[in-house]
Structure formats: C-alpha cells, structure tokens
Length: 263
Image (cartoon, rainbow, N blue to C red; front, top):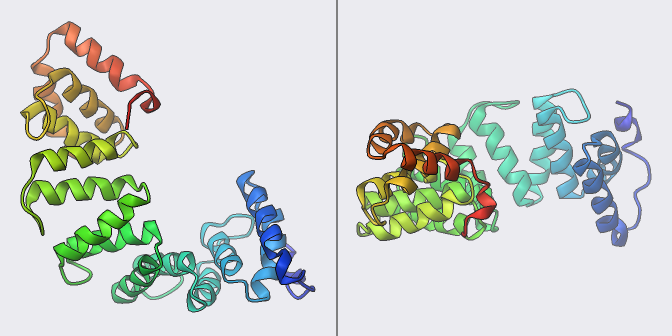
C-alpha cells in the first residue's frame, strides 16, 4: 500500500471532514479498504480522532494493509488520547488481548470505562462483563448491572442476556425469574445464543416463562446451533418431553428466520 506516502497531503477544510468520513465509510462498507484508507490517512494525520481510530482498526485487522498490531496501537492511542470513545474501546481491546502492547487488564478496564462513560455501547457491555467476572478487576455486581442495562439500551444482546442472568442469580438485585426470562427473550430474538439457551431452559422448567416444551426445544436448538454451551444439558430432556410431531414443530420453529419473531 502506498497510502502512507500521501499522509502529508493537504487536508480539505474542517467543514468537509464529515463528507470525507462518509465517503470513507461507504468505501469500507463495500470492503474497499484501500479507498477508505486513502481518505482516513490524511484526516488521521491532521488529527481527526475517529479517522485515527479507523486507521488503527485497519492495521489491527489487516484491512487494506498488512496487519501490524504495534502500528495499530500507535494510531489507537492517538485516537484514545483525543477522547474518541471508539478509539478508547479499541485500544482497550488491544490491552486486554496483549496485541501490539503489553497485556494490561487494569489499563483495559480504565479505557473501557472511559468509553462507556461517553455512551459507547460495546464498551459498556465489556466493562459490565469484566465487573461481573471479577478476575481482571474487582467484582462489583451493582456496577455490572448498571453497565449491562446501559449497553442493553443500545440493543446489545449479550448485555441483555447478562441482565437476565443477574436477575436469575439475584446478583445486585432481588431474584426475579419473570424479569430474567423477559431479558433472555429480548436477547434471544436478537440472536444471542446464550440468551436463547436460557429462554429455552425457562420454558422447559416453567420458571419465569410458561412451561412450553415445543418453544423450549425450538430455542434450545437455535442456541445449540449458535454454539451456546448452556444449551447442552437441556436439549436431551426437552426433546424427550415431546412426541415426533412436537419435535418436528420445534425443529421448524428453530429453522425459521428470527425476523419472524416479535421482539
């Protein structure tokens, strides 16, 4: 790639930055990352934080350029230090994985929190997970719930599943099976396999949701297909509770597009 050679070229007036960024995103959407980088590169050099993040993300993933985690971190650091929440989140991910920078869970959590406080949904989700796991940073179930709810407001299905688990396990809140099932359903119809597994389990046991063997097996089969380990122990008993007709109906529902299901 020769786009780096053009980083120093004159950047268009600031009023035109949004137009240039839109053109770059359009190019990236059609997977033409070389064209996108030709726009993002000069903007990044000129100090546009989101462009710096995007250049860093391309080096992190090897999109339009050879993958270079160390160079990715250099660009992501510029974006993060300029206060860009996506840059903070992506730099946090690099610190969490130890890619291009030393493994540093504490720094990762600090960056995720900075992005989360600016309203970045994926950062809120990851911060919630870290707070709930309590391995990388101190356990705090109340804060885990707060950030999971914030991420859920952005439509992030994994956060919805976590909210359900917190209600199910009475972590930071009173146990509420119905509320847990409500959140699992919201996650399930958005495609989260663990949410589907837990909703299937709820229908199997009649805990927080009506006992419904067909719905239970349908959700569990979706979850199993999606890779959820949580579904494994429930699939066999759910299948055994149905006759051949019920199994066929559950399999039909499991194969139907999620778009046919009401959120």
